[in-house]
Length: 332
Image 1 (cartoon, rainbow, N blue to C red):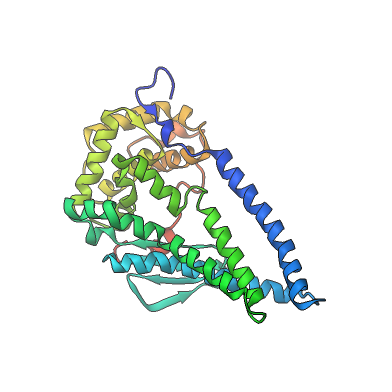
Image 2: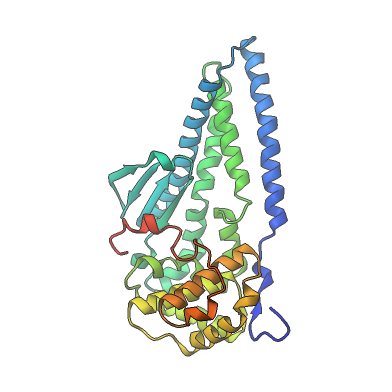
């Protein structure tokens, strides 16, 4: 971080802000071009068209719902194929929990909030053999399951273009899924997360770190994996936002289970408190996990709150962003 720092910030795992901006601008350009193309297409097929904004928005909404649903189902189906149960399935306003769709929930207010699938790794990743299989094969297919679904949807959209009755729906279906595919180049996404682990295999523990949050106890293999990751990372004196996130979760996990923190973590806490003023000036993606770590240290009485009385912790730091979903999990 600075020349006098004991730990060095690993900038090789940083994601380019300007790359994300470039992709967003490209997507906006595509939306403009796609909108013009939509009207040209309708005019060329049907001649004069009486355009209804209400009808258009309803069609866009339906296509959006199905595009997100197909993407998340792509992840879920491949995860199921390889034997990974899910904890949470969310696609727009549709939610299911604890590896069953029997009590599916609909939350209209969440309609435009995208989706995600959280798997139960604690039940499956219980040995080195399964761990190796996951990263050699399963991780690729599960990560790209949603991308495969959107690629298939693009092809379906193209096929629908060849009939006058389905040409409008086909165009919108093709276009929406093309945008979703382009968004995969913005971090965090399925593609960029997979790419990150491929480039940084020593950070494999990051993939499973939510298990520390949603379980009262994780299996012994994962517990040792997290401790080995932290021990190796802190021994090398090179840290990043993922390090802060996992340390925060381990401290919280140890606190819930009345376990002592390792000497490496205790040493890091001392350094972290001393250097927090500098850390708090870093970019938002680094500052947020740092603030969550600070909040956890205060919560478990590992640091005096008065030491930071002049620092205002973000309201996002004191509660996990998925807390409202986790409340419905039986293990949480």
